[in-house]
Image (tube, rainbow, N blue to C red; front, top):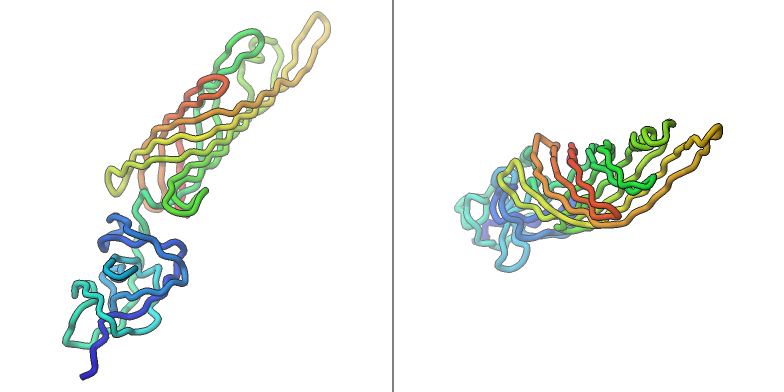
Length: 274
């Protein structure tokens, strides 16, 4: 008697595709496969998942959006019947493509990029004193796995600029000032999932700041103009919370800069998945 096929070959079509312990995008990730690899998968999907054998004795679940059946096989994976794998008295139907869910990955495994705004308590030694003022920075942020490094390493990168100098230059000199501040930082983040819709995170990494201010000083009948430039390299620490809203993620974080001067800020980011 001819054996009834209980599995088929499937080719991975996505890049760095995650394998889940259960047929749930928020379940534990137990492995990762590469585009172009082939594996034994179930004949039919279980919802938006195929049962997959990534190596002998190791079974998991893969999104049907990330693998394409290429041929039927005769091997037995020993999985549960509800996953379309196992003994059956009938010839299984050909798999049908299911509409992928809104979220293809667990929230903590998604990556986002988008605009950022930061209220920074700027501190510097200038004009014979330590001066401070709250400045607004605008920028762009990248966060998540597979952003700066490949693999399951959660990182956060930010570029931002303040397009106006602190007001204390004008207050001290009596003349208007111009200039800007550029900030660049990168952090390794530790993510603490709290539910499917939000997680807490904290991290640290290097930071770089460059400032350029055009200042003028009146002495008697003369007005002297000069440029005040400064560059600083230090460390940055943050603590925040992220939410999932559809395919976007708003995040709020408190940051602490350890550079020439210690500064704190409140940061808001709204990222889009990519």
